[in-house]
Amino acid sequence: MGRKYIDCRDYPGDIKCSVALSANTEEELLEAVVQHGTTVHGYRDTPEFRAEIRKGFKEGTPPL
Image (cartoon, rainbow, N blue to C red):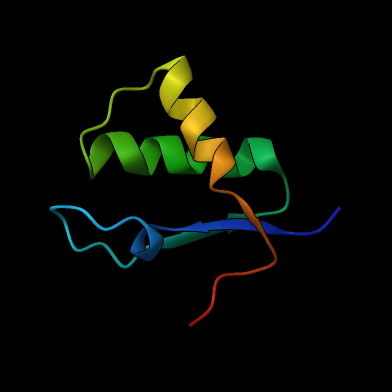
């Protein structure tokens, strides 16, 4: 199993966020992204939000 990541720059919104998160497991990445999404972007932690996040996971590490 390889490393996974998600990059806020791929999801433009009102907040110009340049954060990219990566982890060795999907569960670890999911928890980090949920924490970031709720505290920084104001999303609610719902099953639908978590499902959408998982769709955005990519293999490898974020580009610089």
